[in-house]
Amino acid sequence: MRQEAGGTAIETLFVDEGFGMLDADTLDEVMAVVDGLREGGRCVGLVSHVPDLRARIQHRLEVHKDARGSRVQVVGAAEPRGRRLALLVTAG
View 1 (spheres, rainbow, N blue to C red):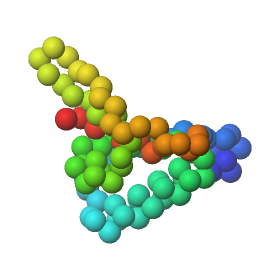
View 2 (view 1 turned 180 degrees about the vertical axis):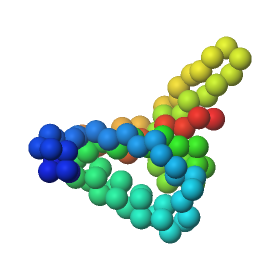
View 3 (view 1 turned 60 degrees about the vertical axis):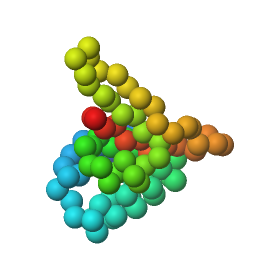
View 4 (view 1 turned 45 degrees about the vertical axis):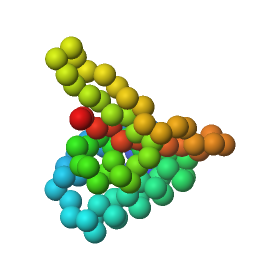
């Protein structure tokens, strides 16, 4: 990833783009890439409203909006031994 970024190391990546348009097979491919990045030591954040992603990602931030404003709920706990997380930021 460093070469594609002009020599700059990218340790954290947030993606907010069209997961709702993906079929199940393509979503599986995307999740395999996300898992590979995470296992390689990167933190990956996905911003999505896709319910299937909630089921696939155990550690996530959920944003809930009501008449008083928005609140963030942390779902899941940090993984042991300092492993990087894949986070899903959702609006519910």
